[in-house]
Image 1 (tube, rainbow, N blue to C red):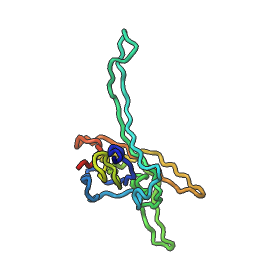
Image 2: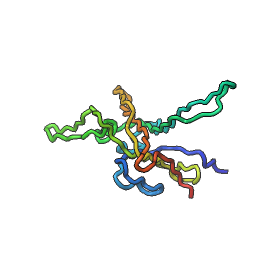
Image 3: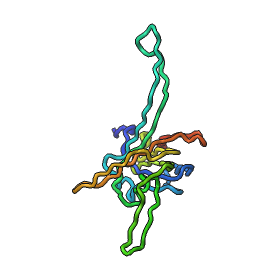
Image 4: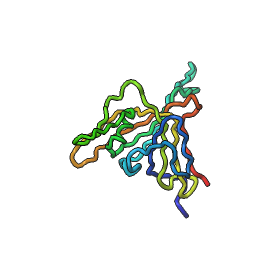
Length: 192
């Protein structure tokens, strides 16, 4: 008997594009204006992988005659995706810094630079997280992807430059509701 299909695994590649970019259909090559984070995708991220976090808050309804809650209302929910990128090329780092412009000065010596100040305007992205291997709970060798239609890079960046350890760039994308299209995010699995 084979392993249960409902167990899925990574690794996953993370792509970003401008809000409104069409999501690439699962099972097809990523197309359009999507940019893979890190030159090697999953091969440019830490072994911790991509962390998917869905949080929520509730308001309890209590009545005078009971000690237990009699009803709950969900008042808030958030979805975020985090990863540690081991690619410090400025073309990758720019996504942590509001997509600031990378400039090249021919020199000599030739240099590339990018400002670290993010400013008041927060850059929004569409985010596509796609499996690089068999990750569907429904189909052996099937793919999986998470589609976030509107998100911002909301995490703090803290990188340690030390001897013998790779310098990781922590990125956290937090989903926003896309009011123009009545969409938030979804997970998609191949099943046939």
